[in-house]
Amino acid sequence: MSSPHFDYVIVGGGSAGATLANRLSADPSVSVCLLEAGGDGRDVLIRAPMAAAVMLPGKPLKVNNWAFETTPQVGLNGRRGYQPRGKALGGSSAVNAMLYLRGQPQDYDAWRDLGCHGWGFGDVLPYFKRAENNQRGNSQWHGTGGPLSVAFQQSPRAVSTAWLEAAAQCGIPLNDDFNGPAQEGAGLFQVTQFWDDQRNGERCSAAAGYLHPIMAARPNLSIITGAHATALLWTDRRITGVAYRRGQHALKVHAKAEVLLCAGAFQSPQLLMLSGIGPGEHLQSLGIEVKQDLQGVGANLQDHLDVTLAYHSLRSDVLGIAPGAAWQLLKAIQQWRTDGTGMVATPFAEAGAFVKCAPQAERPDIQFHFVVARVEDHARRLHWGYGYSCHVCVLRPHSRGTVRLQSRDPLDAPLIDPAYLSDDRDTALMVEGAKKLRTIMQAPALASYRGKEIGTADIQSDAQWAAHIRAHADTIYHPVGTCKMGASQDPMAVLDTQLRVNGVAGLRVIDASVMPTLISGNTNAPTIMLAEKAADLVRINAN
Image (cartoon, rainbow, N blue to C red; front, side, top):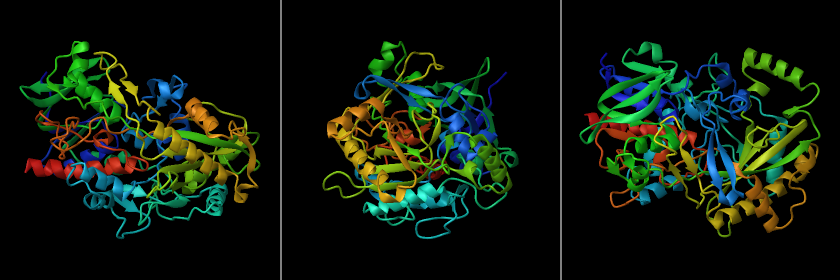
């Protein structure tokens, strides 16, 4: 049986892949095939925001989650970190906390200054706006009418408001729009959540926004779920298709124009290396023929490392495990099903702040996520009682890691080594962030909630903070950079500024792996922006 042919084959139906599939298939003369290893992204665990707590831990079952681990981390006392990634249409936007954040304009201007012309903030802002259907309305900073529903939170907990008051008591200004004129300050996050139709209160994953509404109406778009890509197909020096496994079947699909690799910061470099594109010495050590020696493939891995301060709560209007909690949950489920509001609609991380902690810092270098529950080890360790917590992460870490192949078997997980805290500057700044966070957590506004500080109450010195961070810190889920775009003279650039793989025809990478540096915030909205812009680049090339 002959393999099917399409104009474009997209590998990965996550935030970038879903966006591309929508935008490219809008032209009925273009045929698009999307391969996704997971399911269709429609189940209630994805649609109900609170159910992220079921999917994120990755155990006892891996539900819509690859649930990767890192290699042992020297900077974390030899511990293996946990790396959940979404496995369904919508990708990690199907399992995340839904926070809509763009980062700082300087992040994108820094990309431009590194030689990524066309990627400054003025260049990318129109694509952020094009993606949005923002409850704020249309303005200089925001857009309406786009596929991605961006909402105010349906019903944030009172403790989140108390945390904002505590931040203000510590001299942090309030900010009602982290994606507006300035990022600095404390406020409630906007979320990727439906607000204007019968899906009110449901998660708006990239699939729910970009794919589910148009799939049945576009015969030129073929979506194959349960399809695990295993190799890129070569014809001379050109990529012309993708091999994949679906169940027990080995199959192929061919691209007449381009293959668009959107498998994420871990699996895009993995598939490139499995296909002979990457650092030659590493590929040769596994017996893989080197088709294109690109040293930057799998290098430059950056991630937001995170440590948490947690407290018992004296009040029960937060999330916890306690007598009556099950009844509260049942009532909350009914409320959410009725009108989309209540506890089930929570993103967990309801409030947060961007602050400056380093001496002479000109812009925020630390982010706080305030969570209306006690969170430990990615919700894989549960505790009796009510609590709340807050996360602190360094926004622009100096540490750089790698992704490598574990073996030639495409079904093996990649070797993920973020090299956390390999640069001492990251440790020092995280210590300052933790100290600043504690002042907020101990401010008067939280007095009616504040019970015992858990796990950090005895810490006083910087050395003790550093030791605690090395013993407990882990990712807050923002890996980027492993197929970075760059100027032609950059020997570690994998892609040009059109996101085309250097030295290989017919292939682009379009996902968070292309970012040369990590942005100052959560990465889902920037990944969707990248794909919005990439769709234009692909169309221009086709014409």
